[in-house]
Amino acid sequence: MRTSGLPILVRVAVAVAAGPVLLGGLAGCGGGGGGETGSASCAAIVVYDGHTYLGHGGIRRDPEVTGRSLPAVLPGCDDTGGPSEAERDEHVRVEELADVAPGTAVLFDGSVYVRDGRDLPEATRGWFRAPRCGGAGTFEVTGDWLGVTGPRRPRFDGDLRPPYRLEVHVTSGPTRYVGATIMLRATRSTVPALTPSDVRTSLWRGGQVTASVRCTDRGFEALALDAG
Image 1 (cartoon, rainbow, N blue to C red):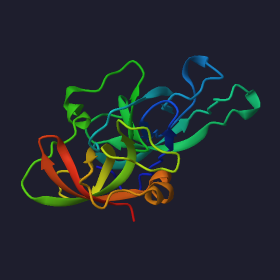
Image 2 (spheres, one colour; image 1 turned 135 degrees about the vertical axis):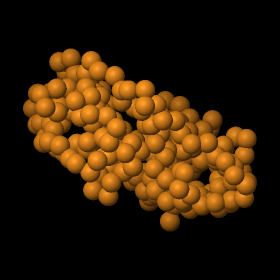
Image 3 (cartoon, helix red, strand yellow; image 1 turned 30 degrees about the vertical axis):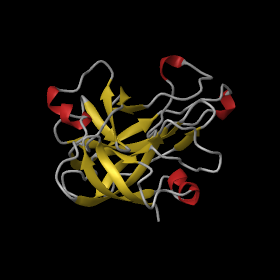
Image 4 (cartoon, rainbow, N blue to C red; image 1 turned 45 degrees about the vertical axis):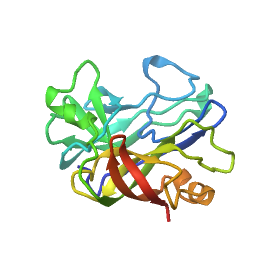
């Protein structure tokens, strides 16, 4: 579960030229591993207690934390190839996980970092499984926007043409979904849908979206979307 004091860093990128996908949500970018320089991006790394911890992607449910924070270092990042542009090491605080000792893994900016050479225990598998949409009727969820994918190329002004799927981290709604990352499916029947203005003023900046949802055999179907 995320604690109120846990910072969330969301960097939103729009991939137009490369294909019909909008992407968001790389948190905790650290210095490049293996001594590489001039790379396009930096590896997700933190150093705790003198050991290197690597970012582990795919978290679908917030892990429980103890509320205790620990001192760590975010290595400087040189993603430009020029030594004068390299960032300095940054002292940060990582979160202690409730079910895994910090000697194995820690939580930083909502992402799990695993000590190099160690593995997460079997009990953590639930962190990587999103809840299934279940139950009759409609319900409302609000969440942090992480990204959107779809078969159509997005227009330059942020116009999203259905169908598309919004990836959100749920912050309010039915208890079973709060703290989980889910995919909301928007169709031509989603009214109101997201407008270019919504995308430009809210979603591109890591804003929130509220959805009226019903469950279908295809998952979370958005009947209405609001980024206001």
